[in-house]
Length: 93
Figure 1 (cartoon, rainbow, N blue to C red):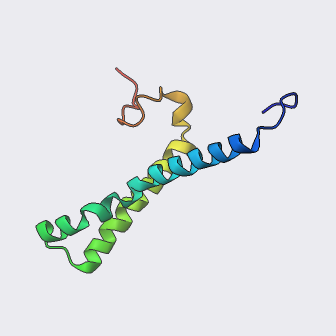
Figure 2 (figure 1 turned 135 degrees about the vertical axis):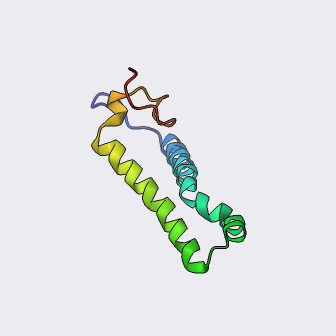
């Protein structure tokens, strides 16, 4: 929004807020990926409750570390966006 543009109508603001809320909820769902498969992993790998908790924490810390690393290294400005989710951030030889 610039200084010359009129402010958005209230209905547009609520629509934008709702869209942002849905996008945030969907993006945060990856945080809970370990919890979704944890019952199967506990059975298959014979995990204890403590090990299950550590696995969940490790997944969440991995997401935090990845987010921090990508923001600190400014990878979004250096690499085309379609290559970042696939981990193709290294330059081609």
